[in-house]
Amino acid sequence: MINKSITFIAGLTAKQYINKSMIFIAAGLFVLLGFGVNSFCQEDLVKLHDSSYVMHQRSPVPFMHNIHNEKAGISECNVCHHVYKNGKLLENESSEDKKCSQCHFINNNKIELTRAYHLMCKGCHLEKSKGPILCGECHKDK
Ligand code: HEC
Ligand code: HEC
Ligand code: HEC
Ligand code: HEC
Image (tube, rainbow, N blue to C red):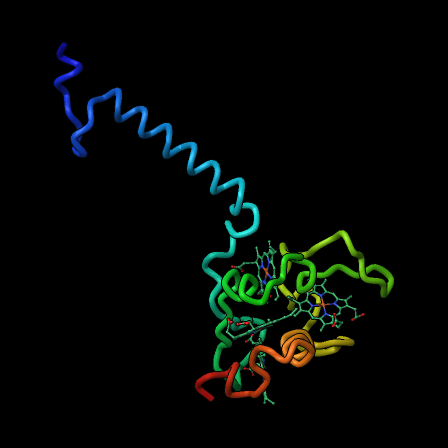
């Protein structure tokens, strides 16, 4: 009797509240399982500005990680987060736990960081005839 009369903020009884909660939890799990694996960690990555550059000559590059990859229709993470062994690309491995600069150093490297970024970003945009290729389109302010 008393239970029935207890209403929660949204005007629900305890039982309804619990039922609703279950639905929310189920929905949350669904979202997590469906999209979370792919999009959980980097929802905050919106620009590229690597701190290993002693001094940036150019402005940060806007890069809405998940939105970009969705719009560009890229489903494989290792298109960008690649792994090489003895000069060979490993098809089934990826390196999203590492920054590009951990392998492509600023200097003294086969493909140093700026070249790595330019080759990868512009390379695909040119290939697809889509996405920015001019300096000012990526380095917006300078
Ligand atoms: C498709 C996007 C893109 C285009 C087009 C592009 N860049 Fe970049 N560039 C980047 C990214 C990403 C980085 C790495 C930025 C970082 O981590 O700070 C970078 C880094 C740099 C850096 C080294 C970092 C710094 O701030 O000093 C310079 C210099 C630079 N770009 C100059 C240019 C010039 C000049 C052009 C045109 C010829 C150009 N870029 C075109 C994406 C682009
Ligand atoms: C078009 C290229 C591209 C693709 C595809 C891509 N990423 Fe990234 N991702 C980047 C770049 C560039 C960075 C920044 C790397 C750095 O800071 O050195 C990054 C950073 C990350 C980070 C670090 C986040 C942070 O805030 O620093 C994670 C985690 C990540 N990516 C996961 C993924 C996963 C998972 C996928 C596949 C679903 C994926 N990426 C696909 C380009 C890409
Ligand atoms: C675990 C180390 C590692 C990470 C992390 C890594 N790379 Fe590489 N990358 C390599 C190696 C090794 C090669 C082969 C060429 C070489 O020997 O330097 C390569 C080759 C490349 C090439 C030339 C071949 C190609 O695929 O077009 C580009 C461009 C490139 N990397 C850009 C990037 C960018 C941008 C990131 C960050 C999103 C990144 N790499 C992350 C190790 C790495
Ligand atoms: C494997 C291909 C591929 C790679 C690698 C790639 N892009 Fe793109 N990018 C695209 C495509 C395709 C589009 C056009 C998407 C559309 O239709 O709007 C695009 C669009 C963009 C845009 C326009 C705005 C937006 O977010 O849609 C920016 C900015 C951009 N890319 C930056 C980058 C940077 C910076 C990198 C390197 C870290 C990069 N891209 C790497 C394929 C790629």
